[in-house]
Image (tube, rainbow, N blue to C red):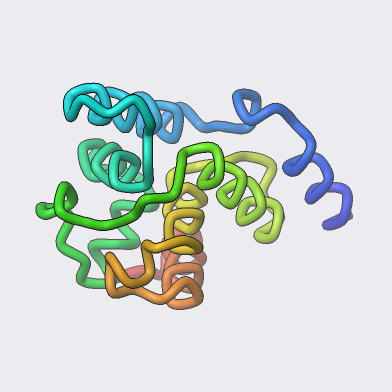
Length: 138
């Protein structure tokens, strides 16, 4: 059954998988890129979008790990949005989820340059996401 879920998450169009909050984070990332005069949305913009949401599993996870989101404009996550959303989709599938939420977007960010930029390891964040989803976070 897990294999079927992975196929579903990996092969569905992204727009069918995104939660409303994840969609909003992507919209905010695009707005941030435009506001900075960039024609390409990167991980930096996505991180700003997640921070501007001020809610959701990704924000709760980062806060519980002690990451200060107030300085999100100074990070160095240069990966493009299409790469990050593909990684987020794979994270969702790996966790057996049939949706892509803010938590998966965060994990996608951490696959690239985000681990160094946020000082949080991918596995550490993944473990914390699971705790948050199960209501076990601080």
